[in-house]
Image 1 (cartoon, rainbow, N blue to C red):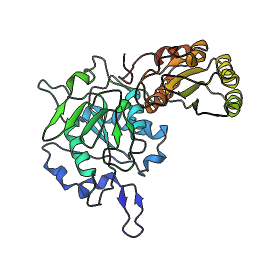
Image 2: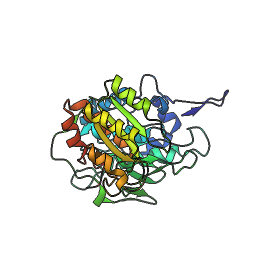
Image 3: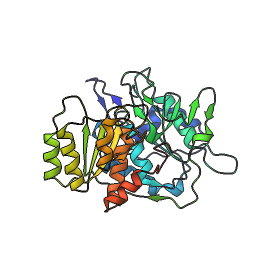
Image 4: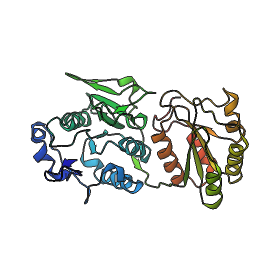
Length: 326
């Protein structure tokens, strides 16, 4: 973002003018090229169509560059990082997302450090020619996270992101220390980009006193293929009649039922408590320790690539890009 000198409002920056804001980039001993959307957008306006555009840009330029840095607003950065991780199959080059809490041009902006370190990470290769981080990652405030394990948890601090259920991939201090044991291995198959995404999903976040009638009406009247629950604790839910009716209607339509926890830490263990028994009875797939950002984008990816919901359920149970613990 740039701050308008007259109004004080924040507006998207044209990345083609990046060098004017960051003259330090010229000190790198390798060339850096920039590609910008024809009309830059605020991250709150990001949609799956933008994910596809980003993926196709990287696909077209994949052989020409050693690594990629995606500059992105922080609000939906974890969604984009998660989506790209699923869209990129057998990724063998670094794709690092980064941004800032304070916009470019403000004296105390965190944009400069985040960008410069992200570029260094994207350009770091091991002895022998393999990249240090061949996966979609997110760098912010001295921490490198697996993209599909991250979430934004703070709107006011520089330390805006966390990865509660998975260790950081690297920490930047005087030097960048990589946690090599938790980084995805270099793939042996050919890189492939999947741009088929489907938003045929109903999201239900449970709360005490929830009125479920609108959800029942919605899945009955629309072509919805999956219902994503944000349940309590380890995957628990109310056991009253209206909730069972919702699950019954979903099963009758052969919908994919995906059970994830509202908690940022921990995991879904269906059957641990009696209050998760309905999920077990109606064939819900446990989201284990997946984030909401990864859960919704994984569903979009699978529904876009599989026409049979039984295949979607089978793939949901797998950790495709390191988004869930084994």
